[in-house]
Length: 101
Image 1: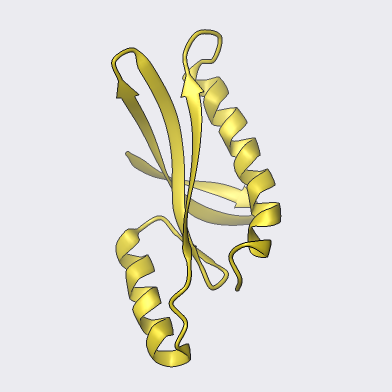
Image 2: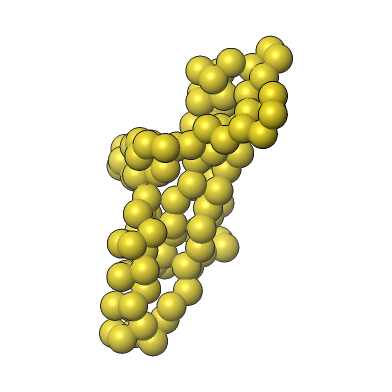
């Protein structure tokens, strides 16, 4: 597991990058926490933000965003990274409709 930065509209945001496997099946996973217009790779920072927002504004909503791409025959780890990065960019376009700021 590692934290990487993706770029959306010129702004970097942190995501966790993990390769998971079961038997011969491997998948690339990007995930992050989205709350009040902020993105967090760290679950601890997300929880602290939730606590703070709960005290200040009585809002504790947010989400875990997880994107998964298979790695395997005809799809290398590098290809999966490129495809998942593009999909993450597309996801960030529509995410505000579902996770309010």
